[in-house]
Length: 115
Image (cartoon, rainbow, N blue to C red; front, side, top):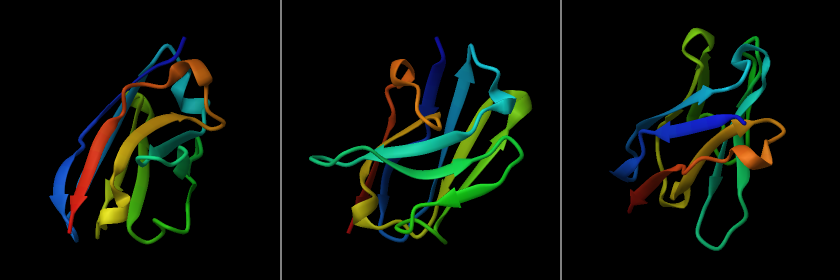
C-alpha cells in the first residue's frame, strides 16, 4: 500500500506564500503521475495540480499562474508552491497519484489563508 505524508501547511495572510511537500513510500514513484488535491470545508475534494513522470504539469483554472508543482524522483517527493494565496485557497491539501489511489490518502496538511 502506498504511503503518502504531506507537510508544509500553515496560516498565512492573503497574498502570502507556502511550499508543501509530500513524500511517498512503497511506490515506484518515478513512473507515476502525481497530483495535489484539496478539500475545503463543505466541498468535494478537487485536483488542483498534477505532474507527469517527465515533469509536465497542468493546473486547475483556479490556481493557474499562482501554484507550481514539481517533483524530485530521487527523493520520492512532490512539491506544491503556493503564491498569491487567497482566502478561497483555504483547505486541507493532499497528494496522491493521478488517478488517485483510494487506500493511500494521507492526513493532508492544512492551509489557512486569512483576509
